[in-house]
Amino acid sequence: MTNKKAIVIGSTGLVGRELIKQLSESPKYSEIISLVRRPSGFNFPKIKEHIINFDEPETWRNLVIGDVLFSCMGTTIANAKTKANQYKVDFKYQYKTAQIAATNQVPAYVLISAAGANAKSVNFYSRMKGELDEAVSKLNFQTINILRPTQLYGNRTEKRTMERLALKIMFFINKAGILKKIRPVHAGEVANAMIKSVDFQGLNIINLKDIFSLIK
Picture 1 (cartoon, rainbow, N blue to C red):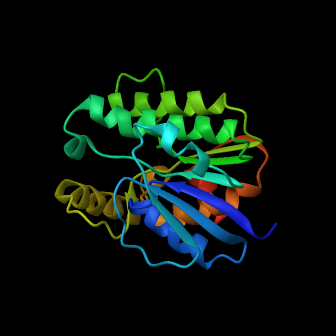
Picture 2 (picture 1 turned 60 degrees about the vertical axis):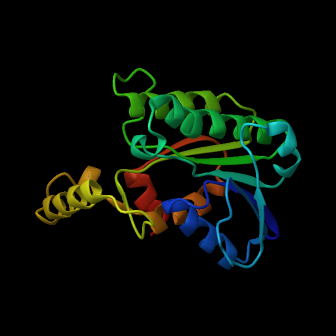
Picture 3 (picture 1 turned 90 degrees about the vertical axis):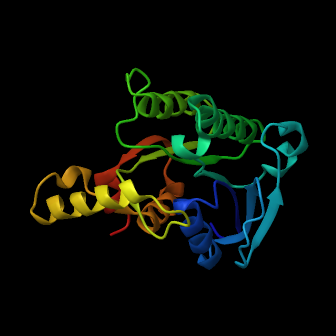
């Protein structure tokens, strides 16, 4: 199917920026609705950017209409300052948008989760991701694809010293042939897998191995 209309939240993040670029270059997509909290500065073709307040869904629910919702939103505890703020962005905003999309009969939903997502985890981040995975899995979409990548890398806009150090360690370990199941994955590869997964049917949990299989 060509002339698809995509809705994207989280387009200013690491994967979101790659996703927006790839969707703009794809002949299958004729329009991309990007819902953002602040101006992105993007100048990609096909994009219609809307600055919204995610706390006021009644003001933007009419924008969540199309063929697929891509959900890439997320923040860190360092930026959010509190777990409550991080939960609002990572869970509440994403779930509410997905809920609206399902009500508006958007047929496909693609979410970036995380490796280790588990609603019963004692780890706050893993539990939050797992709770979102479980919640959106119950919504009325024809297709629900939940990607669970390992550590992401790419061109970030902000400095993350500890993350860069962790990536160096992981790349060294993987080069030695150890722990390949948790090797880092480039944001562009995840974005590519998100787009290619849209034609799936039903509920699909897409782990790291599946992500690399999709983009071969």
